[in-house]
Length: 415
Ligand code: FNR
Image (cartoon, rainbow, N blue to C red):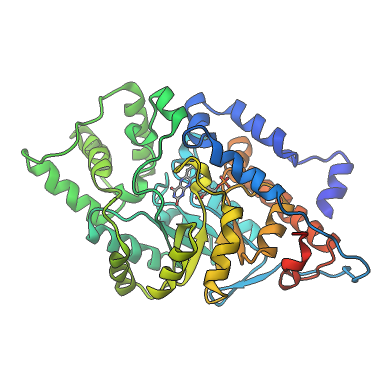
């Protein structure tokens, strides 16, 4: 409510609470290639649109006279209490919109008490982010690499960073047909961006040594050395924790790193059987991100997984795919309360959060909105976006007649 009072008093925040304005302002501030990469989805953008229109199918039916003077938005997840039912989705390559990138997001998340999922494609190594978060909650998102030692190393680092779980993203074994990026012939990784988790990894470094020593090593063609690539490499060098990297830069090592990253970061051959390897390597909860079919959700339980993230990657992978909110009820039914179900893709306001929880989600993930906050105002911008969403959700919850998150259930919606 303080937000409301400040707003009316003219003490407006750095970023606007008006979603459409926030998005427009952020896009305007971004470089056009970054805008295409971040805002864009796959194909004709039909799933991007469905992620929004899907919410409109459901309507909240507020209940009256229920004494909502006191309220509590906290939830329990994996034995921990979180102050609100959100987390920040893993988003790669944030250096495209702000020099502080993931580090600014990590600080804002800690400030707001909202868990942050470190991306495998981050611009800042997880150790640096974790170091700035105190004891605030965090998770690590993993892409299944072609090299299992690298997978094991990431998991080990995540444990050392105090992560509360591993989020294995399954929907991006290949990059989707991203029409805006294709039109601009742009891929940030080719500029050496978004590979900091790899270049800061001891196993990756060893792989790189081996590769550079083997003149016959086969691989995809090296990216052409453009000014952009050089700039990207230099900026990623500045984020490296390792010593002597400038020397290595001169030896052509960063180019090799980009090449090795492209070769190994994702393995489209992954199957259910590979999950055993991950299960053996960590005691942390494992969540599968990108589940949309109830049968896959059931299978995840059979394979001992501890959580499901219903997501279509913000409409960036399979155009024409079912929206996350449409997929949610089927997955929730299949999971039957055995593990938490988190939903992302399309969350923009408090009502969306409320609807997802009413349909059985334990929490929701926030993607592009916090990137827009980062673009416009760094750490403070992210924090304000989070505060706005938390306030919007809390007001929606109370005005709908619910005091606590557990009271939000199917009967709060019309259909
Ligand atoms: C993503 N997403 C993503 N997911 C993931 O598991 N690892 C990653 O590195 C990334 N990177 C990434 C970059 C950008 C620019 C976007 C927009 C998205 C997907 C992300 O975690 C989440 O599923 C969606 O962003 C949720 O949809 P909304 O909230 O953006 O609509």
